[in-house]
Image (cartoon, rainbow, N blue to C red; front, side):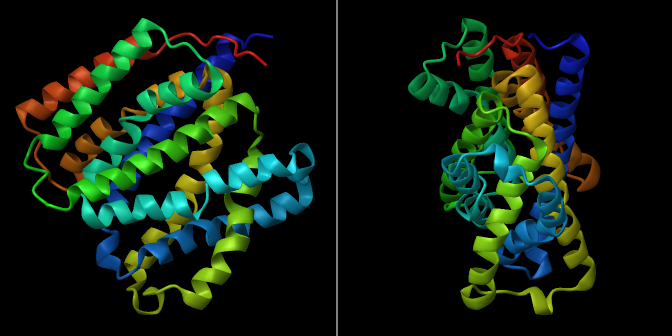
Length: 297
């Protein structure tokens, strides 16, 4: 049965809410290095604090009953430490703006490649053209302002691209498997917390004990609760209601929104080239967003 117009509206609203959430996440992650926390600490906050909410909910709803063991393993791996540590490590080499550009900016193209390669999904010419325009605009935003000044930036960019591949798989599977909220919380937080936290506590370097309280609380609240709980659930809802192609394309607005918030919050200047690139990116979004088509079973 096709989704009603109201459900599609909630899907688009959820996707655009995540644009703002992730754009703020770029700002928060940009200042994380000043908190004294390691990337392993950030991952521990992400899984550990979210699990405080996820464990009692999972014990009550028992979401594993609706999943095969293979689905639990795949989803937990996709949302697991390899994905998030690649993302956090990327900020050690490349400017924070590259995170939005090389993760969210390439999501439409990555989703197209995965869809064609694994699921025989045929993208429309509009979808391809809009996605290419988004990617070109994102690259212009990256180059503008000499953001490629670091010789090691390409390492961070590759790590961000790895993160984009992981997340594209998550978006696609959220739609194809029609994942529920509790299934996502269980696999994305509870399972990964159980696997990662003992390893972090016993063997990984940590600056948690020496971190100033203010920056620690900011990172704890935002890394631990906002993207991992609210973000995953909203994206899953958007993928179910408007499809993974529309969701991926809307999330590609994060680089532009991150640039705007950077200018408003951090005082970073937006040049004329950046403004034109943001306009082109928005046009690409309008071109690429399409009505959802029913996927084959």
